[in-house]
Length: 374
Image 1 (spheres, one colour):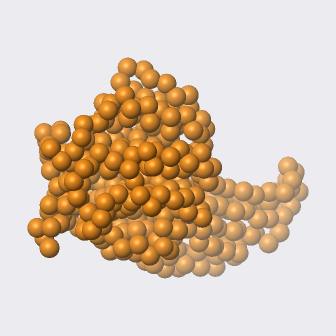
Image 2 (image 1 turned 180 degrees about the vertical axis):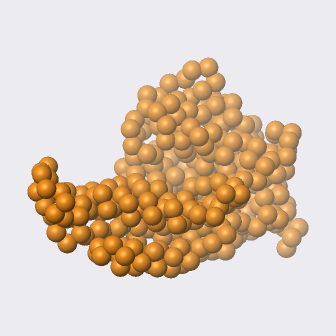
Image 3 (image 1 turned 60 degrees about the vertical axis):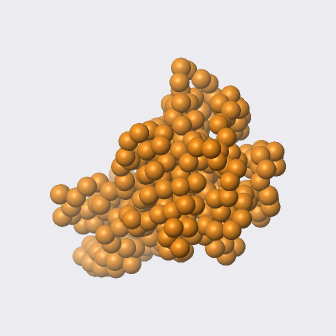
C-alpha cells in the first residue's frame, strides 16, 4: 500500500522488548507511560500528555473519522523473564496486551496519508478497576470508532464481551461455638460455601445448549472467615464473580440475586447481606459496521483469508466505552488469548509484526469506507 511505510522489524521488536522489561502491574504503570510518551514524541504524534490517573494520550492526524486506539499498559502480577526463543518472545504482558499496545502505536506512526484523527491511549488499570478508561470517558471525547488492543489472533475480530457483576456476600449465623462442640452453632464458612453453590447453580441453570460466550457463569473467587483456630466462625465473606452474556443485562441478574438471597436467608434463618463491588454491562458491536469491514479488508490484505467474528467470555474496557458512547468497537491484536495471565506468557514475533501491518492497512480502509458512508 503506497500510503504507508514498511515497518523496521528490528526497531519494532526492540520497542516491544523494552516495554516488556518494564514490570507494570496495575497502578504501577508510570515507567511504561513515560517510555511510550517519549516514543510518541519521536514518532511524530501531537498533543502528547500523561493525564491525572496515568494514561498516556497522543494524537495523530486531523478531521474525520475520529478513531480511538486504546491498549492497556498494566499486566497481572508475577514477573516473567523477557527472552526470545525461536519465533516466541516471552515476558509478562507479551500477549496481554503490550504487543497489541505497541503494534497500535507503530501502525499509527507509519501512516502518511490522511486517515482522520487518531487518538492513541495507553490506559492504566485495565486488569484492575478500569481506572484509566473511566477517566478517558470523563474527558468527553467524541469518537466515531474505537479499537481496543487485546490478543485475538490475527484472523479473529472480537465483537463482544460479557458483562460482569462482582458481589460480596456477608453471611452471619448469629452465634459461634467451641470447635469441640460444633453442633451448638451453625458454621458461617460451611454455610457460605453451601449458599454460594446454591446461587451459582440457580444462575447457571438451563443453559445446556448455549455456547460458552452466551452463558451466565458464577465463580467463587475469594472467601474470608473465622476468628480463631478453635472457634466456629460466626461470619464469613464470599466474593462471587458473575459473567453476563449479551443476551441479558446486569439489572436482570441483580433482581434474580435479590430474590435468591432473600429466599435462602428466610429458609435458613441466616443473615445474608450483599453489596455490588463491580457492575459492567455486556457489549456487542454491530456486525455490519464500517469498522468490521475495514479490518476484514486489512486482514485479507495480509493474511489472505476472511476473519472470524468472535465473542469473548471476559470483560474489558471495550464494555465501558461501548455502552457509554454507542459507537462501533472491536478488540483486536496479536497473541493467543489462552497465553494471557500464564507463567509462560509469550507472543509470536512474526504475528506481532504482521499485526502492525494489518492495523496500518485497516485504518486506511476505514477512512475510505467512512467517507463513502458519509
